[in-house]
Image (cartoon, rainbow, N blue to C red):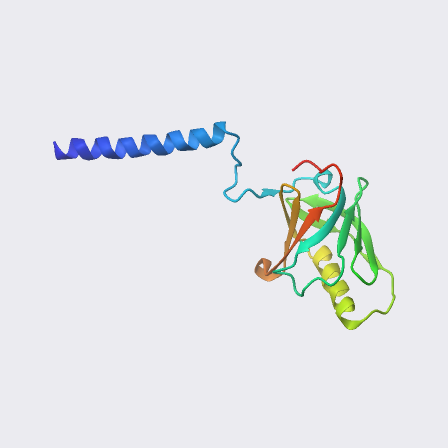
Amino acid sequence: MRDARTILVVGGVVALVALGALAVTLAGGDDTANGYVPVEGLDQLTGSWLAVNDASAPAIVIGTVRLEFSEDGRVTAQTGCNGVRGQVSVQDSTLVAGPLTSTRMACEPALMEQERWVTEMLGSRPRLERSGPYLYLHWGQGERWWLGLESANETLPAS
């Protein structure tokens, strides 16, 4: 009798968990636990993005850091000092940049350092994630660094 009661209780719990999962799925729940989705193509990046969260970047963002992705696969980065440009693509939710070029103005040391790490980030095959109007780039050994950007577009790319 005791075993039958245990089976009924366990069965009831399993049924409740299954119903909860079904309800989340039917309600349009995200298939990821935290609401972030991988970026699958350049079309999800096209447009302008402004750095808004530097909590885990190599340094605090000074001024404006802006990334612009074009439909033809080019990125332009405004780093607060010089501009950085190059060809990019998205492969397996990572940004793959070809050779990057930049202008060569001398700036204050903190802005030169910011330009260095932004250029390093772009060239390091950062992992890309989207969540609503936000784009996250993760890079460095063990994804030590990440930078959050917000879409500056009037019409957001599909996430």
